[in-house]
Structure formats: C-alpha cells, structure tokens
Length: 77
Image (cartoon, rainbow, N blue to C red):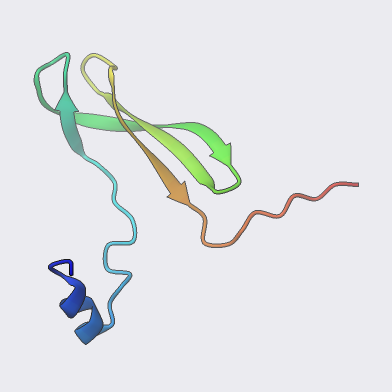
C-alpha cells in the first residue's frame, strides 16, 4: 500500500496532482539545481512530449509527456 492511498480513498481526491511542471532540475553540466525552460518536442496521439532544458547551458535535464484528456481523432478523406 502506498503512503497516500488511504488519504485518496478517504477524501476522493485522486486528481490533486494530475500535472506537474518542473521549475528547477539538477543539471549534470552545471553540477547544481538550475531553473529550466520547457520545449515542445513532439505532438503524439497519446500526448505532447516536452524536454526540460537548463537555462544556463541548454543541456537537456529531463522530459515529460503531457497526456490528453480526450483521445485525438484523425480525420482522413
């Protein structure tokens, strides 16, 4: 059992942490936690893929996929 399972069952708040946006991440090149900027890499059917970049040296320090609430419908003719 995860530590917060009983809280979620008791309160019914499963969507509390639905999405996170990083403001600082560890940069291996700068050797410290640094502010980051988000760059859109790909638009995929399951969600948009973002890359986090160090604001000082532009090293890639992380990635995330922002999942869509509704499935994407592709229209073909």
